[in-house]
Length: 230
Image (cartoon, rainbow, N blue to C red; front, side, top):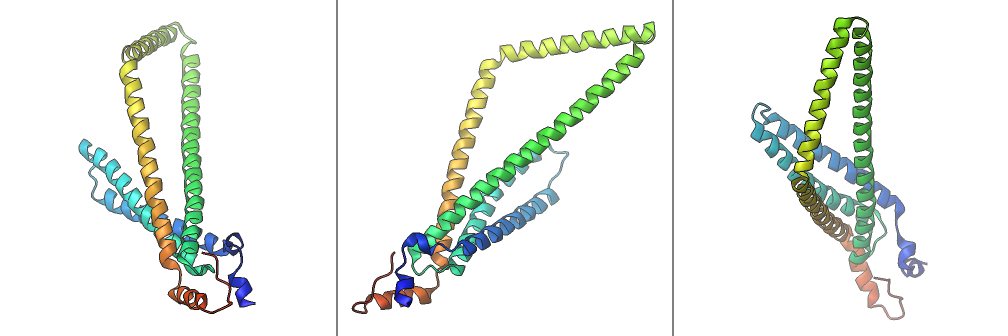
């Protein structure tokens, strides 16, 4: 029975419970590390210095990469430790599968956060527009108020025209800046994905118990005993 259990096909030896345990553990570690970095960065942050804003963003980006690598390594290690992996290759595959789970979940959380922020901003803008419309309606009841409303409308129209003209004149520079920022973001995400994948697979390789590896190697020398899949 033991030989048959060890000789199962590789796709039958996936420990889903271990993957989910590593997933939640890794996300917890990631959130705690992000909170730690935010606390340290904000404690040393001076909002009156404009240069600190740029340094804060760069620091958060670097710490986010470090936190992701550490969380992926620990999550892969735990998943391999709790699984039935008897070889380093199987542990690495568990780490790779866990990396996919965490990456997709992280993108989903980021998308939801951005959508929520945009929705809140749209609601705030809508409320401001309604308040402005109500004030304009009240001011238009007398001749002096109508003159003020007309003046404000003309001023707003001039500002919009100026902004449109500025955008038209600087469209090439804006397009080039958007292209550079998009390329930099894509490459940064690509490198982050590779680093975290390597960390998860290394954690999975390290998390396989040495006793299982030694037992597998010992069984490989027994005549007639089927070898486990690597």
